[in-house]
Length: 255
Image (cartoon, rainbow, N blue to C red; front, side, top):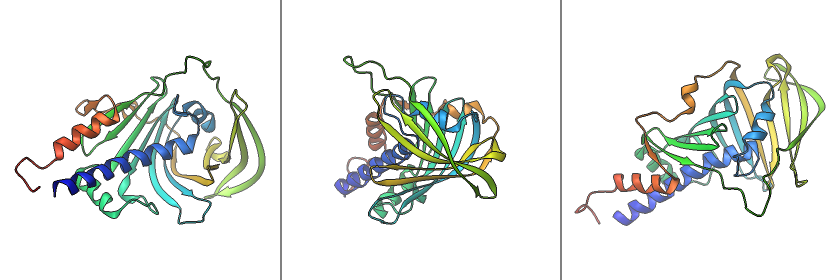
């Protein structure tokens, strides 16, 4: 029925939009104003160009099965690209029919591009050849522009991760209002101190990111721009509506 079809599309769209953004925000912290890009750059330190695969998991305080996924990362001078296959998300509460619908609609693959130099994010769906431009929230007129977080790094031990000798560090970010958030990083000394593993607490959940297949070379700059033949939308809602209308059954079909 047309009504049921619309509901399934809506569930798939919301799930596809929410999960990539939440993973990126939880991984790097920061507020919506700059998408956390300043803190992100500090986490990677001298590694301003790399590509890698990441296993990301979010475990809640209730000890439910952790939500886990794999993402491909490309990082270049503060700009970040993540490629995610939504069909491979494990332990989520997403209805199985929504996952199947996303794949059928070409929405199972999602790409997030954070352009710190332009202060925008692109949310792309290669299967739809579409992308939305997302801008951070404008600064409040009654509050000063926040300063970059102060970062303190304290070595708390040494461990070996995947055969790489690592220094385990506690990294504390202190905002100009005094608020703090912290994470633990395992920095591989044989990979230019790349944070091969990170772990942080947020809202009662533990977010762990484990990198592999790390290449400390510059990815192609073209990866950080939407393809020229993709349809551009000015916001997420516009992209949702445009593609939902395109995929709706023609009039006169099943009701």
